[in-house]
Image (cartoon, rainbow, N blue to C red; front, side, top):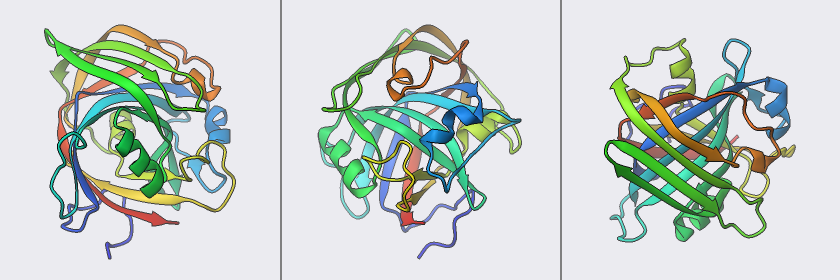
Length: 249
């Protein structure tokens, strides 16, 4: 059994899965906490920084997916993902709360919804690199889900200093827990089914990022208003991730 949750867990030989995250962009907007309150279970508190909640859209590629004790399966070990997220705390433990996670791998979507209770949705997504810039294009295909599309092009820039506790960059990116209430009950659930998952990875290497294109209805697909103004951007270098534990709380 792993020790009790802490904001910065340790690397462990006991983990459920390994993954590699790359081609990642953090795009965030400050929003009033009351705007997101209906999207979280009553037991979770909206996590804020200097009075603002934050709404994020994060495209990236997940690869080298390998459950503990098993080799990577060709054709099933990589996918592209787009998640819409905010931040929450329970008993003082900060974590990520996902409104949705669109992904390309049908079996991976099924496994994440079934085994990890996460609101993954089927989608067509391409994520390509050319001349130092990255471009992601997506269309949600999940039956019964609100339609959504996404297209963005960005260029990673200079490496930023390591994010330090107490800074906004740390608040938005250094998250080592996630919360979920079930794949079909994520939005506005008021019941007692709540899980907390633990992740481990080295601190992010963040970079400046410049947008050349942004056209998205991901946020709006949740009934939220279109975010105002340009997003706060951080591109990120690849890193390896351990999915360490999922525990009902």
